[in-house]
Image 1 (cartoon, helix red, strand yellow):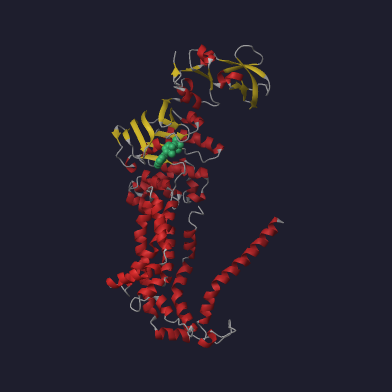
Image 2 (cartoon, chains in turn yellow, green):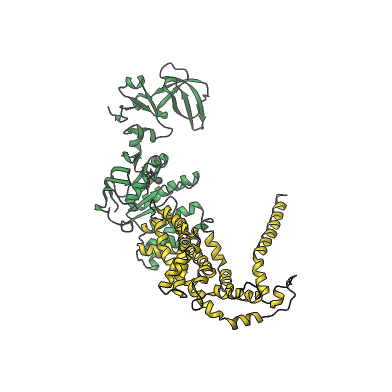
Length: 276
Length: 335
Ligand SMILES: Nc1ncnc2c1ncn2[C@@H]1O[C@H](COP(=O)(O)OP(=O)(O)O)[C@@H](O)[C@H]1O
Ligand SMILES: [Mg+2]
């Protein structure tokens, strides 16, 4: 009896999970489908789901009109660069707050997070003027700089929570075992921090990859990443749905592939501590 | 060699004075237990010796050398933590061998020593497992293995058995004691359990509120407690304390008598009369909790079975030779 009801529950929750998974995934699926339609079919009503004339011409046109690889390279450099720098700054910051907290540690953390509560558009004009003055407009280093600063609070928060999960006893045990600070770091702390570090970097990479506000406002061509590439296909008339979809599909493909291969790591990192 | 001396060791956390001047001489090869109620500073004192905390004042000598400025890695001590603190990403072999690796021992020598330690602790079949694949008792053994394999000057244990169930705790208690005797290495062992202290120690340090109340062998503490605190802390069930006229007759502010030093008379007129509130029959022992009117609740122990029950009237007669006397400030009065 009890057994039957659990099987039932498993079936119901599995169906539910698939349903919601599909619901969440649907827009992406629809975008990918639309990218293989002609412009006319793409906004036809009623829409056709699978039975339309499949074509890859959108991809060809998109590549012809704007250079995908140029934008993709920019995205990789900007997202990767800002993530790397953010992590390098965040590790010592989170480290010191997790392992030698002071009375003000909580306040500093909250203050950092509070910077994320301000809408970016509120500082668009001053940032724009600063970028202009220093010749950073449409430069990769400028975008790396601003995205790094934008995500830094979240990176520090995440690393802080992971580091806090590492029991102090274990580090002290290493010290008692005769390990110097350097060896303690290499042999004990780093291996234990890697899952958290990896998922933080991955999340930050995704955030930076998809960041659209600053990249759209501060770059035009030279440093333009894939967000600009997509935006160039969006027009108020909505005449280029198929091409827009093709551009978007191309833009998110690398990050989806990356996410797919690292999902195990990502889940492990995000639930680190919950399962000891 | 592992002779440890504390000279007026002090520790404050900010404005809070935790260790208020500890003086102690721990002989090489002895098993010393720090015992006291929770929060009295046992762990802090142990961590000061380990070097995991810096002293606020005083000296710590290991084999005659002051080590207060020596980092923990260089003090040559090893520690077993309450939480075991095993390295989760290393196998049992890696955990036990880590200290040897840090000391720069060759791989062959490390393996040989790790395997010998594992054999002593019955861990050989688990050498390639990760800590999460072990039971609590096995993790405990790994933690001990990690401590012994380095052949330190002294072992420091911080309530190592408190996470084990009662039966395993008794077994490990015996094993740890035997291992220590066999290796002849100085050991400092922290516990809040006075039974553990009495059974394991060569010498006990009773701590209370950051001060050493008494330092002596288990029997010394049992027979000649220095003050009311030690008298009440050591021994189970607790010593009975009586104040007022009965104490004044003996020239003391308080007198104490252990439950096992009280004679129980069914209908005697002498001694302290009372009514049994609770009677515990263990077969081997009988414990009586007696409501003795103005004297309060008294505990008496009888070896063997005594068929008395709640509600029965009895008279308790303390053995005059085993009465402890204390002055108004709680210190023991000697004859
Ligand atoms: N790092 C610390 N900062 C502030 N107070 C501490 C710290 N460590 C211990 N204490 C305080 O010192 C006292 C003794 O602690 P501890 O040595 O752990 O006691 P025990 O091990 O005897 O239970 C406690 O009151 C505790 O709150
Ligand atoms: Mg403690």
